[in-house]
Structure formats: C-alpha cells, structure tokens
Amino acid sequence: QVQLQQSGPGLVKPSQTLSLTCAISGDSVSTASVAWNWIRQSPSRGLEWLGRTYYRSKWYFDYAVSVRSRITISPDTSKNQFSLLLNSVIPEDTAVYYCVREDFWLNDAFDVWGQGTMVTVSS
Amino acid sequence: DIVMTQTPLSSLVTLGQPASISCRSSQSLVHSDGNTYLSWLQQRPGQPPRLLIYKISDRLSGVPDRFSGSGAGTDFTLRISRVEAEDVGIYYCMQTTHLPPVTFGQGTKLEIK
Image (tube, rainbow over all chains, first blue to last red; front, side, top):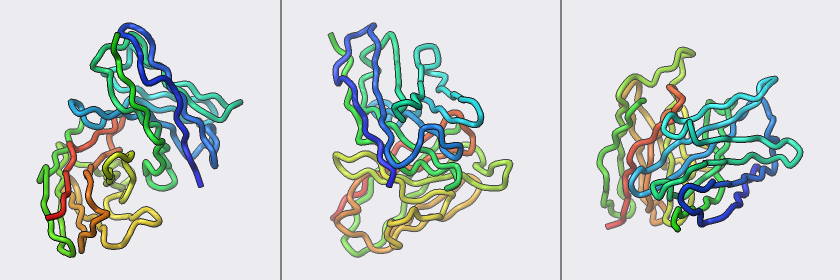
C-alpha cells in the first residue's frame, strides 16, 4: 500500500522560502509509471496544481505558469522522497499543500494523496 | 487552460435518495490516444481529497459501487445511487487530458437533508 507522509513548517514569513517534503512508502520516486505532484488548496483559489516530476530515463519537470518563476520540485532517490520549494512567498500562498501520486498505468489517476500541510504566510 | 465548471455548487439530498453532479469542460477532454482523462474526487470534512473515479467511469478499488461516472467530450456526470451519511463532503471533477496544467472544478458541496 502506497503512502505519502508530508513534513515541513506551517508558518513562513513573507519573501522567504516555503519548503515541504513528501516521503514515499510502498513505491519508488523513480518508478517509471508514475509522477509525483504538488497541489494546493485555499478558499480563494480552490484546488490548484503546482507541478510534478517523473522519471523516464531522466528526470522531467512540469510547473504551473502561475508559480513557474518561484517553484522547484526535487526528487531525492537516496531518501525516496520529493520536495517542494516555493520562494518569495506572499500571503496569497497561504494554503493547504498536498503531495499526490499520479499513476500512468491506472490511466493517469491521482490515486494517493498525502495528509496535507497547512502553510500560513505571515510575519 | 481548461476551465472545469460544476453544477450545482451545493446539493441537499435525503438519505437513500440519488444525487447527481455535473461537470463541463471548456473544450473536449478526448486525448490524442483516444482516452478521456476525467476524474472525480471526494473530500470529506477535514480530510484530503480522495480519488473516486478516473477515466470518466472507472472506480478506484474500494470505492462503493453506488458511485458511478458517465459522459463524453465536454459533459460529465457523477451519480450516487443512494446517498449515505458518509457521502457528505465536497466533490470535484478534474482533468488531466490537457496538462500541464491539471485543472479542477470549483467543487460541489453535498449535504444531507
């Protein structure tokens, strides 16, 4: 059974960097048939996809245009996890952040979700 | 980006009665491979979203068969044949045909009368 365990601070100051990690159990970050996504949810913006990474002989990355200049998603094969960095945060980045597995063999199903991390951007 | 529009935004249903949620996309969700990557999520209060249905009508393992999905092109429907108390929550459609980005509907809140 695949599980995703999120970790990271719940409070970030404006202009600083939001950093979250998603630890994977029951699967591998470099499995070729899946991708690893970050999605956030806020009352004002609803569910918003931020980006993903996946491995097909090399690592690929897709990012949402809205955050492209500020986001980095990084896989860590030694720890079997992936992380989200969002720099220069503003109060509008306040949201619940989720890491999510996307299974290509299951017809692109977003089938496993992390527990969510509430991140507040405030001084 | 593909815009996903759900109706209604809220629904009050009697226990044991059916419920239906519609989702319309701003353009066809048929992929060049012939599949349609439209999924439905359920979010119970205080919980992360949970995948119910993918590729229009395929139920994820463990999802009760009272949930069903249908549709084609730009119009899709999630049906619950007999609503139970545990079905209370917010339901979202999402598309992964035209990614990036993945886009979501605004959500439909299901409550019990």
